[in-house]
Image 1 (cartoon, helix red, strand yellow):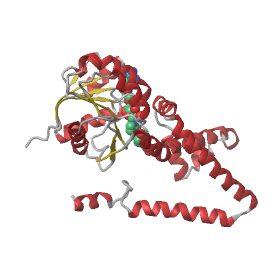
Image 2 (tube, rainbow, N blue to C red; image 1 turned 60 degrees about the vertical axis):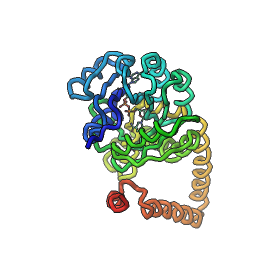
Image 3 (tube, rainbow, N blue to C red; image 1 turned 90 degrees about the horizontal axis):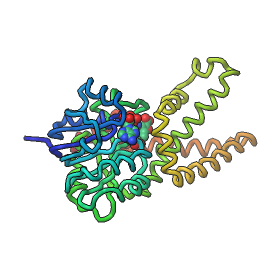
Image 4 (cartoon, rainbow, N blue to C red; image 1 turned 120 degrees about the horizontal axis):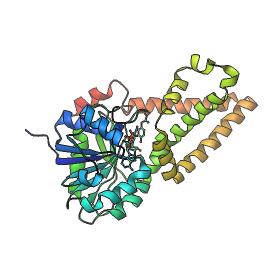
Length: 308
Ligand SMILES: NC(=O)C1=CN([C@@H]2O[C@H](COP(=O)(O)OP(=O)(O)OC[C@H]3O[C@@H](n4cnc5c(N)ncnc54)[C@H](O)[C@@H]3O)[C@@H](O)[C@H]2O)C=CC1
Ligand SMILES: O=C(O)C(=O)Cc1ccc(O)cc1
């Protein structure tokens, strides 16, 4: 029995996410033919060398011709230009989606350029690494991870269901969410944490002259995680913050208030405040693991297999 969900898929932007999608599509037999385009000649050459995509095209317009599914896999700030470039070449009835980390700004910048006879179903796989580029992808990236679909108003059910089946074929769990809610949730769970990691690594770097290499030499797991996250692609993360400004600022405002309260507790020796706070946060972590929502937890896969 064939697993093909889309006959022709076009990937625009050939980095971590697009390359992982390609290898996962191959693994699952989800697409007939996959075309690809990246802006730089060097990236296209690398893609051809490593066998990424069945055909690498020299323009985005050529890559999307006749495609049933078009996936925009570029930084959030580049989505609008790509939408302009591909709009005249889209096949009527095609589904256009994206994988951007922010949803409202992508919808507002992409949707106006697309013709009325295609379906725009924005998406966001909650899976990634600190690596980027066409050689960083791997087929298992999306396994047991969530992918959020954020259909625009008036989208019929069928294209959303087809895209859901596609992401499930790539290994993900799928949920549908409203764009503004998505952006707030991601500001809490991903965007603000990334900014905090960037800041902490920056602070450690400022201290370097005082401590020489001690920061690196003695870095414990917490700080090592910060350095991993802070090694993420600067263009991608610049675009995330510029395009999820309101939600990120809202969360950072709350974060700063709580940080000041903890700072005050340390200064005044208020151990009760610190203990109560850390007890509350420990319960949150334990709740995540008990609910089986920590996809790094070893028992998550088993639970899924049991529940089908
Ligand atoms: N890296 C991660 O962990 C995750 C990233 N995302 C989102 O996925 C998207 C892609 O991210 P990655 O694959 O990590 O990035 P990446 O940096 O690995 O790849 C991006 C690709 O887009 C190309 N590109 C940039 N501007 C372009 C343009 N104007 N036209 C055509 N190609 C262009 C780059 O040359 C590169 O090939 C971003 O929107 C990001 O927010 C979503 C989930 C996780
Ligand atoms: O590498 C990590 O820790 C990540 O958090 C990956 C990631 C980055 C951006 C996203 O929009 C989704 C996932």
